[in-house]
Length: 395
Image (cartoon, rainbow, N blue to C red; front, side, top):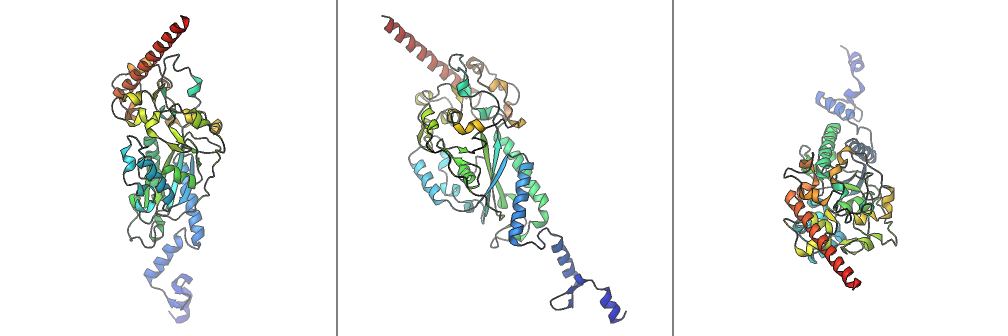
């Protein structure tokens, strides 16, 4: 073959245009692999935008309601507020909250070289009645927080987060190389625990602070996250990742001068806008403790067996909340304002089907029975006191 024929047989990929030299076979393979990547020909901004939209869609496909992204950074103001809250004892029996608060306020201490925090919302509202729609005391019924009427959100969210992780690993397999992590991070294969670490209410994460920065809502005066179109009946999950993604604009506060939740809290646990004293909180007294309530805790119960929804039920923004339609959170009829005596008679294996994945299992059957008995004792004392008062007034 002559020089002319050799030149004609070479493709453009076989020649380095800068020096007009013939490329080696391995170099040609490397270039072909590069050109096959989605990142070929993209600017860094285009790559970041494409990956952001891709991951958001994968989260929605896995069953999450909304997705927002925040830039990973240390939160010194939140750390100072958290330390003050802890030092004043407002965390009550939740000793785990005091474990290494710095990690809760700095993603880089949890995932080295973290660059983004993906925040996920999971709606759980239903068309069932709210606290003020039922004469709980008159009918001798007890209230179970509406978040606990279906499957435990930890189980649901974790299952979906695993699906997201596998979808990211599969969909972006060709890209999970050096570009997936910080340039200073060690070169190694993609590992979800190091590069894509998720948490559902149990990791060292300030979910609400990150969700507000990611545009999923603002922290209301009841301390919960509120969205102007979806209210507050939704769960939160987070993913800390070394992947560089586009951040969403943060959500601004829309509570204004409203004080509905502060005024409605039955026990005064909302000691300041956005500040909850767990020692006065019904949810803490019915969920976070072990064994029977102390006399002081029993005095807080009112009509509540497990959790409390009052500060959400009175929030004007929750008039925009719609039933989620998520079958995982479909209310179990026996858990919607059950009769107190029915709770006392619940069998050891739990009420009806689904007990093994119910949030109420955290308190346990014995604990729920003890709470129901304590509510009954309070009602009996209140009735006796009212009877004596009526009798005294009659004389």
